[in-house]
Length: 139
Length: 380
Image 1 (cartoon, chains in turn yellow, cyan):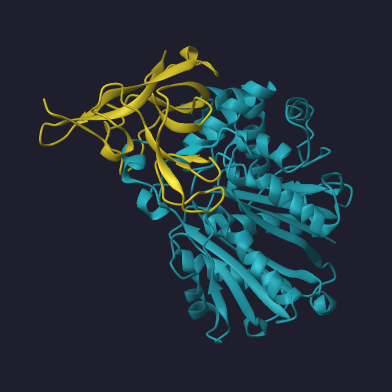
Image 2 (tube, helix red, strand yellow):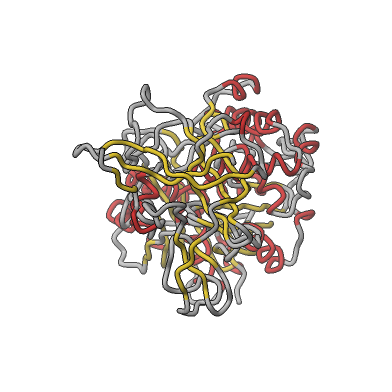
């Protein structure tokens, strides 16, 4: 089955050991994800692309217990929806990114736990292409 | 700089109605005008906001096409406070003598949804299921209770308090007290927040009429003065609603900056406040905002709530009319409902919800996407 990533510009997938692509300010060192052209800390336009570390620690998290409204592309009906978790993950000492987690059981999530970037199936589109999404799984 | 006095307040009940947002706004305006004892033609200018109605200024077609300057304001959950600020500035600067701030909304049922592109976010953020405000509040309180030893019982207590206060408020949406156990056992939406810990988007309208301080005695025996309205947006380093990332070096939320600026402008501190309205988007937000607005240190909420400090009869009454949890949140009107309740309290007109001891200072705070907060201080 052919595969695509939900948002191809955000990571280096399908490279092996793909990383998130953000930006970092050459002047003040502030990082963003996704990438953007001007710095949100010093306002200058010296942002360069930055590949962030694949491993990180879980700073904050919650579960998503109800079906998100449009434009959510996952299983959309309340009876087929499976709750997922979302976390704020610190990658190295560079940045914290908000992303889905592969573990959705609150009993198995711990603040500060090590997590690593993976790419997992999200849904299959009308053309039969499997759409993947980036996520963090317990490491 | 002139003093700014509130001389009239009006509210259309909050909930779900067959009435349009514009007609609800008209009702709120009529109530405020009656409360102030003047006529619409006496209003010299206005500011107003609505999320669902593109130009709430159309309400003038219902209350009087007098040609006044009216500007529509959009600032998410800080819309009403922004309308209040601009109206107050129009008077304090000497440009006008009498003005009105209004807000009205009529949201569809269910969590707020929109196109992420409308907020400068990639489509993926919504396609992925991250474009939700409730998720942010779940994450924030989950981390907070972990770091500061707040129990889930405290979240239930806060929600229960607001439902109880709503039962005392004829204008509230949810007017039935819900026991703490039922709150805790309701459906888990965004851990640790259960369904009954959340407010719901709904419908309503409110209006506040202000005038130059030295003219207030023409209209009321009990003017309530606007001492400060401060708006702040998020700083780099603060993780706020609809953020795809945040910095490793944390900064505090815009509420902290807004409230500090408001205290400074008013020349008072949190210890001087007698009655409080805070953004209880969910019970966790009320707990966190107790600290962010300077009313306690992080972690003290556990004992304060257990001791009843935030009840109507407590040392720091919070959301005496039931807050967002009991009233719901029509974005454009919510901050004005807060001021309506504070004015009733400071005038001694709050009936069953009256805070005892002749309260003199009121504080109101709102917070919303993408990280905007407003703090308002009123006093007699």
